[in-house]
Image (cartoon, rainbow, N blue to C red; front, side, top):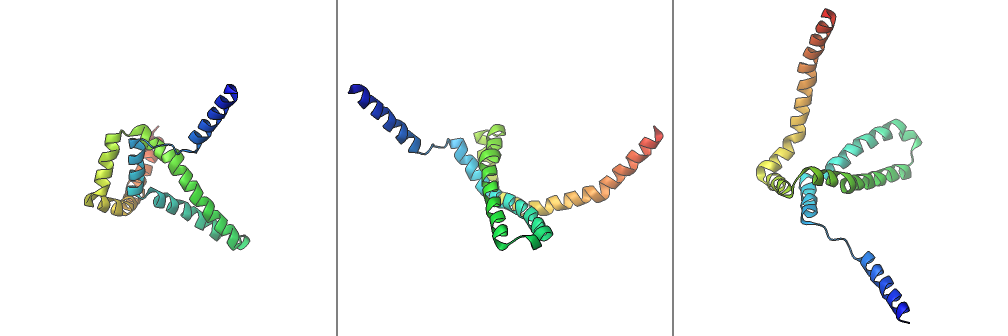
Length: 149
């Protein structure tokens, strides 16, 4: 009888423990806050949507509205899994809790918000400059040096 009560208690305890949510650490909570401030979900969803839009343009005649809806829903799931299983893990791996807080403070500031807002334009201009100015020069220099060898 005592054995049965003990078994029942252990089964009940393990069931209750499996039902309670895992508490996040302070660092994990800060990473969640950073991901939110950075707009990471929206950023990666927009990236995925560009690929989806290209697929829809290419294969649109063969896709039903239901197919397209399914693809969009799956992309939301993909981004969520990426954020939870990969991006946040990478942040935790390389950043200390204090560094994460510093990033939260910066990106939460007016300067940080402005930088985030301007970052796509800055990146676009840098990429354009690299491709038009420096890559052409690089190609010419490499071609010349290869001819000399």
